[in-house]
Image (cartoon, rainbow, N blue to C red; front, side, top):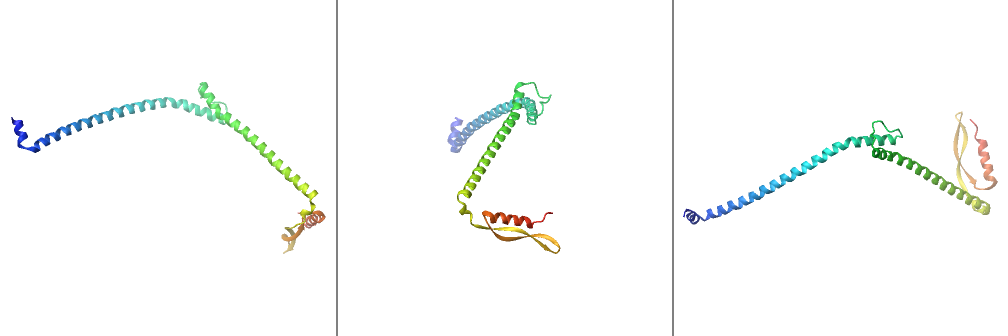
Length: 187
């Protein structure tokens, strides 16, 4: 009877008891979620710890691989500290082999580039020679050029540029060049 009396006496008491039950259920679910997170983090951290231990065991192997690959890049013999593992030796030789292949490719590229340059130069030379032979009238234009003339001022010989009109073809061009050469004194 007392519980009926409590319910009947104060309507807020019933609401307070309902709120307490809801809070207990809520607290129970939050505790379950916290425990699940704690177990999940514990499992994840132990897994990461195991992988870190494996990496620590792998480090000497990687260090020996680095030493042997550096030695092969510098075309030295493999050091005695390198392990006798065939995988390490074969992997360490790859950078040296790649360097050799790269050098051969570079040499081939240089040969091709020189051949292309030579071919282009020869074709331009042939075009110019054929133009001068079959179309000599096209080169009558004059060009201004600067010739260094000797000047004797202040008792010293200096070369002063002078502008002259020089034809581009024929005997006059050759004579002009010879006169320029005669005016330059040998030192």
